[in-house]
Length: 372
Ligand code: NAI
Ligand code: MG
Image: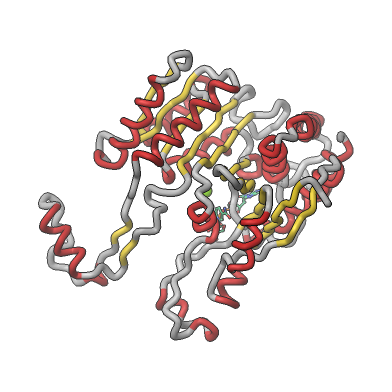
């Protein structure tokens, strides 16, 4: 029996291409693991009305960790599901399986390192080394949404929230409500994860990202909790930034930032921005981490226009595999994968289209494997 069982969830679009590439690297490094395929994604929603079938949930309950490629999400409401013959009459609404997976397994940390590897022609500036901690289970992604809006909800809101009356005379199908829900527990534990990471990895500073001046209740709570946690780490500097301002400051002064911690939506946005600063989505890796399970993935989506072409950059997924090795405690193997990836980037001989080359997804994986 292998030491580890890893759920292997390629998903849709380029998910399969980049996961095949990561597997070339994991096989070369001889991780003592068995990989068990799991169904996830758009195809299963269309066929079965469930993008995250129960059999995949059961699989995730039984493994040490998971690797995930990408899924295609479309904003499908019940009315659109009626157009799919198999789903007609079932009143189904599409919910992103990755968001469900994060909530179901309480994968509350989304850890996204963004490092400019030397020699990458796409780096905004060499030396950028940011780490984002995104809260992963609540905020605007909580899934508390209403469309059409039930009358009892709009009446209650009008009673409780006097200043905002834009929907006073509207029918429930003329507006929609998505609730931003942030808890003390959720805010405290993501802030703690960021500060603990900073402490263990000798990082100098943590920046709390928010918009508490406008979104006072939820972001105010997030900021208060993060400040409380910050006081427990006197050796680490901390500062605070509005989410809009930091999009400008990150580009202007990237070396002023180190570790950033943010609620779910802002964390999602700034991590794409930070990924672009170090080469684009082909370099943004991500770990969804809970107490028992962790799911590693590239930050990018399924890029349908490149699906099955063996063309996109697999480095984000290979770096996600490196994060998985670290999480499993295989840190020496993790270091080897990162060194080999950095070497291929630096040599610059094998490059996919995004880096100005014409090599394939598999060529990159084989070049990295050759350094192992
Ligand atoms: P995307 O991340 O799939 O792609 C946007 C663009 O980034 C691509 O067209 C391509 O130019 C570039 N890109 C992405 N990955 C790349 C790679 N590995 N190498 C080189 N270039 C790469 O985002 P988009 O187009 O907004 O979404 C496509 C689908 O993916 C949607 O259905 C969306 O809902 C879904 N999605 C899924 C995510 C996930 O599975 N975790 C995350 C983000 C989006
Ligand atoms: Mg995203």
